[in-house]
Amino acid sequence: MNQTNFYFNLKFKSNECLGRVGEIQTRRGMIPTPIFMPVGTAGTVKTLSPDEVEQAGASIILGNTYHLYLRPGTEVLDHFGGLHRMMGWDRPMLTDSGGFQVFSLKKLNRITDDGVEFSSHLDGSKHWLTPEESMRIQRSIGSEIMMAFDECCPYPADEKKARSAMERSVAWAKRCRCDHPSMRNGQALFGIVQGSMYLPLRLESLQRTAEIGFEGLAIGGLSVGEPKEMMIQVLDGLMPSMPENLPRYLMGVGTPEDLFTGVERGIDMFDCVHPTRIARHATVFTTEGRISLLNARWQKDESPIDSECGCYACRKFSRGYLRHLFKAKEILGLRMASLHNVTFMINLMNKIRQSLVEKKFIQFRNEFLAKYSGG
Image (cartoon, rainbow, N blue to C red):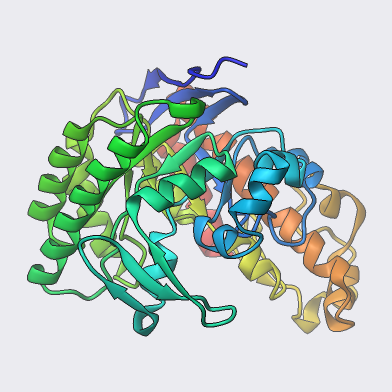
């Protein structure tokens, strides 16, 4: 295994929009871009086995540094030689820095320039998380792509607060790069652009973060409660300035509509818990829009969730049967809805990639969204 085998190959740029097609080569395989990444918060994509996630078409999954640090902990992760071996996943993995979870705890943390003191949501125990500690935890996890420790600014935030979080994120990014030099242990490190909804701060953050020198750049602090139009405004103002030679990752964003919004503006990587979260509440994606399997109209429906989907759930089961599973509170219902939603998102991104290469992205976007929103 080549420990320094990480590079981004930009293969195609659209002449319809800022969309592009490429591939990220890692020590555990190639990731086609643009890509949707299922989230495996605690070392599992909820309710699904690694084999099922692989069959859904996933070439990379996410792990969550905060949750994996608290449980099972780095001592256990080190014993198993990392999360890949522990969970039985041999494809690439990306880990977040733990920053978003720590800051989302709000009253449970104390932020200083050195790091963050927080209380565990499990038992209330006190912990201290610094940029260096985040790097250490992510090295124990063994992800192919690590994220710099940053301060995620909540929405809404005034400009003073947004600048403070941005300044701290840049300072912490430098400490992360110092602690984790380029491709240490064969693990890439991405920097994160912050600045809330203030475009001048975003552009300053981008310039200062890019100067540090990372293997990729992420956009954090979006999809945190702001209106969708505001997120689009930030992307429209920021994306033309993003370095072309690095993969671009829009963190925590990933509905079907979001994929088109981001790809059109040059985003390469997406992740979101949304597909599996709504699946556990009996909501599934179809090409004609989202539907609730709890709806009484499906009680005797013999059709699959989506006739255009080839996942196991759609090949084997009817909407009527899946509705029965949810009404009976059978775990199989949650599993099949999750499998379908993950497969749907990955298949949709495959079609988006194909439409870019065929120079039919705008046509595909318009046709898909018309049918999806119409349904």
